[in-house]
Amino acid sequence: MMTTVALARAELVMLTRNRTALVNAVLVPFALGILWIVSDPPGKFASFGAVLQLLVLIAFTILSVATTTLVARRGQHVLERWRLSTATNTAILAGTLTPALVLFTGQATLLLAMTAYATGSAPDRPLVLGIAVVLGGAFGCALACVTAACTRTVEATSVTLLPATTAVIGGGIWATTTAPGELDWWVPATGGGAIAGIVRIGWDGAPDGAGLGGAIGAALPHAAWLLALTAVATAIAAHSFRWHGRA
Amino acid sequence: MTTTHSPAVHVRGLRYDYGSFEALRGVDIDVHSGELFVLLGTNGAGKTTTLDVLEGRCQPGGGSVRVLGMDPWRQRRDVTARVGIVLQESALPQELTPLEFLRLWNRLTDAASTHIPSDDNLACVGLAHRRDVRIGRLSGGERRRLDLATALATDPELLVLDEPTSGLDPETRTDTWDLLRDFLRRGTSILLTTHYLEEAATLADRLAILHRGRVAVSGPLDEVLAARRLPTLADVFHEVSTTTPEEVSR
Image (cartoon, rainbow over all chains, first blue to last red):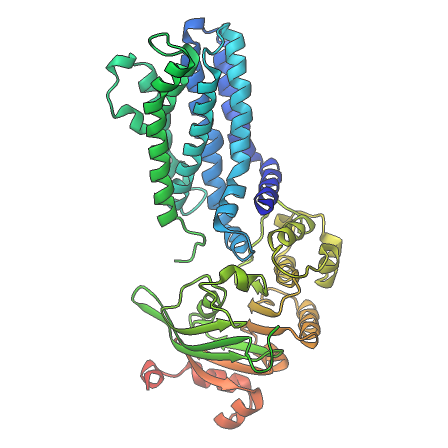
């Protein structure tokens, strides 16, 4: 645990000293979020805005930053160096990915609160919204490990991130702009679709107006999709992730 | 601690391949406790692959490997807690300073029994005055010295150093030799690779020349020269490295 904390702290310091990473992790998603808020959206679009905020944060703050960090550390042979310490592989990955996760959680909390304030529409079930943030963050980290496994250089991340980013944001928008009853069963399998489903229930409440139990029940299929996708991504990453560049 | 009866490194019949390319074809090496052993060879001879296996980073394709009495592949973290390692490529995070990096390294190696304080360690490799400069702004030679400081940080029983003096100016290289001799006097065993033959001749208690994945020559320098009836290590190296594959396979 101490090694994970020490690594996470060092990674956070490195992130704050890397302007490009900082712009990707903080400035771009935050600017997009603020832009949507100041466009004076009507209250009925609040849940759509919340979905967009969260998906953009997952794409930029987690997927992009975590993938770039892993590929850069591998390119600098730093992952090899950490593996020569007594830290476990899990502790190394957790420490390397934690700063992106912390930034994501902080920004998500702030932007969702600002969205609620700007639209005058508070989320109906904040707990369900919290579940979306936690599961979305875990899914983003697992997906970043898969993307990093397929990426040789930092420059190549702009290409290898495209399919994952498209699936997350595109699937989410697709799910949000489709009536819940008309949603094809496989849309949640894009990851973004499942996140959007949970966020909508968290913000608007369960479709039949049921209480917290009903909302959690309605979110359960989406959560199950996200957990399954996270498990699959973790298994792929465990099999294909490379710690050093040498073949 | 190792004893004189248990070599720091014991390798027999080590094999490793990269797909269809056989990088190691039955390597035999012993590094005795408290000695400095130099591994020589041309590019692609198998030096770095041998060290990768000893460090537990590659699973051997055959043969037996013991480092401080342990199997490095199965007991990687136990081995790395007691072995200081310099990789062939500089392995440093560019955005941290040397002091921040060494302090972090000491925390990541908390299983090691002892740690040299980071400030003392930086002074030891002549980087005290650069302790707060970002690693990305250090020169190549300074980064190499920081790599060495990382290997020394846990006051290890064994040092495995892959070309630790490459990129260093002559004066700093001599300082590094003195530093390694200090560690030898304290009982540390050292296995290093180098392309500098005068470095090997100056430092080595014993040496081996790898050629096409096998040990072609091994022993103390004077015995190697006498056996080959050649006057210098450069002559032996040239003779070995120009051997044809057919001669090697015999």
